[in-house]
Structures are given as structure tokens and as C-alpha cells.
Length: 120
Image (cartoon, rainbow, N blue to C red; front, side, top):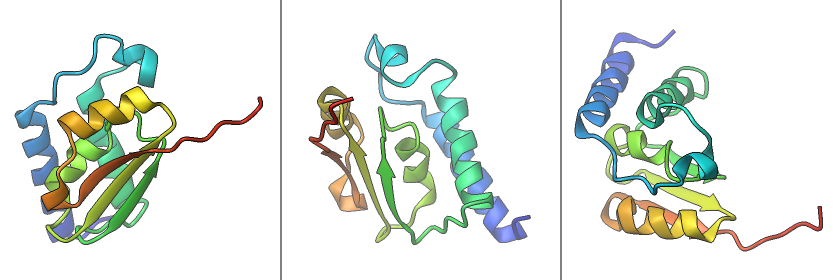
């Protein structure tokens, strides 16, 4: 259970995120990250990260497998200036899109292509 102030901050961040809308997603985004409501799922991820993961507004977040930034977008409204978010993904096209649409170096939000492969 979250204390009142933390819950208020979380819900305010989600409300801002939901009212701001998202960057225009690529046409094939479902094939890249799966289906479902991008905004609603991002909001639910943020709730889970705060309530069960103990995420605080000053956190430094490393998101391995960030896809198209479904977690990054709501975090922009929750994290303090000075916090950090780095999204990593093996799909270069996802990272290119995130860098163009979501990266905000002044706010500590960055995306990096993780150029790795496995024989399987």
C-alpha cells in the first residue's frame, strides 16, 4: 500500500501522461511490442513499478528490452529532474524511434541500441 503523498504523485503523473497523449507510434508497433492499449498498459506498468517495485521519483532506471518506450513515457511524468532512465533494446529501429520521439537528455531520458545476438 502506498502512502497518500506517493499515491497522489503517482496518480497525478498518470493523469498527465494520459492527457498528454503519446508520440505517434510506427504503423507496425503491434508487431514490434505486442498488442493492447499502449497508454493504458504504460500507466499500469508505472503503477506496478511504484507499488510493488518501490520505484521513487529520484530513481535511476535501466529498462532492458524497452521496445517503443511504453514504460519510458509515463516515467517522464513521475521521475524528478536528476533521476535517470536508460532504455536498452536489441531492435535498432525501436531505439532509433525512441531517440527521435522520446529521448530527453536534459531530463536524463536516453535510449541505447544493445547490439547483441545469440545463436538461438
